[in-house]
Length: 129
Image 1 (tube, rainbow, N blue to C red):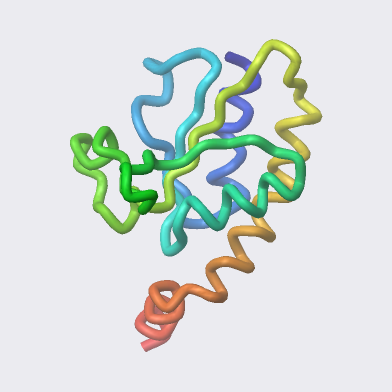
Image 2: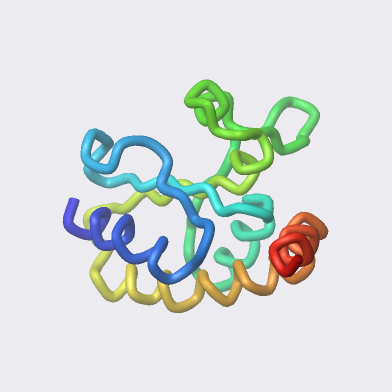
């Protein structure tokens, strides 16, 4: 639970427009779920995998197309935001160093993917008006 809370506390401080999904306390003690605005989970999954970090995202249907989580949609989370979901499941062997490593490598991944996102480009243009 301490590692989960470390992740819950620090990730939104490191990256703008990252949202914890679900209740902060009433959740599984080993799991933290976030939605990252303007990018899809698959890109983050692939980049994190290349850094040695295993994480999951939305469910896949039988046609192999990624879909937003029906649970997140039922919670009232916007479809586009739900597409950027990440679910971190911590195990007994994880350490504070593992969380710190994740917090070091994930922000540049998000930044790089957002730079390729037409939605993020549009958001930036509109926010500068």
